[in-house]
Length: 328
Image 1 (cartoon, rainbow, N blue to C red):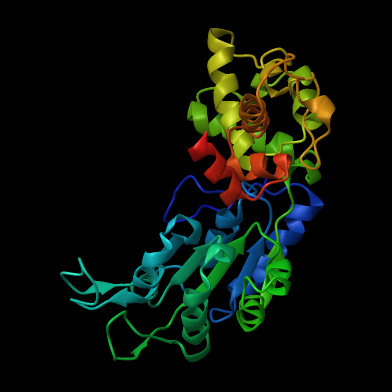
Image 2: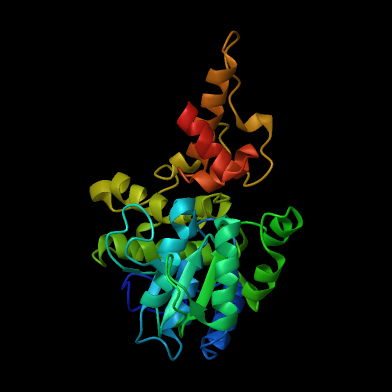
């Protein structure tokens, strides 16, 4: 089985396993844009499909490969600190700013800045991001100096930015500025036998090459192809690590070894619009809060503990799911 693998320099275990026609198309686009070091790239796709891996491929395949690749998860930054993280701040700019701090834009100068989950940026920061992209300058919080930057910006999101624009939650001008060269990474369920290639790849990674990729029996391979992978590549990696442990000294991963992939009803869970048949009905007399806890617990189980995938199963936004988890 032919695999196309590219080793990322900053993270030696990041590889692109490319077998399916859909992924080959993705990598062809990534290879083309890699030769244009100024072009802004927008990578879209569900959570866990490997958007950052594609971004690193673009960086490592271009003329900026010897410079920094700086990754920022926009969803993980407190809204009050986004501008400081991205653009830096001067000493005394706000309470606690006891020294000058370089932002991610300055730190990535000469290289690539990867803005993951860019759809979660607050509106205030979006205006500054637009200026940085248009004028190639940034201004630190509390500062007056325009600082020139030379970087490529790659963004990624699992959200529908066009819908956010219509809902006035994302700037239209920024949307067009970021979408110069879009690349959509398909979910794992649409990659056919690429699932098996990735499974073999993860077995080699987790066993450090000590075991043959033939650990997977025919039954196990069929089980992998049948599963719908709501958590995508991240879920597959976790499943292979767990299966290797369960296989023990026998060194064979069978369909029984992978029985944990089954949903509560015995079938692979659907990645969208779940039906009530996928959830076990609670006993009579259960409270609404207990029912909600049970549904969230089962959705997280189906999604391999991936909160974004679980939120989609429940028909919630990720922020709403996080809020409910804290409350419960």
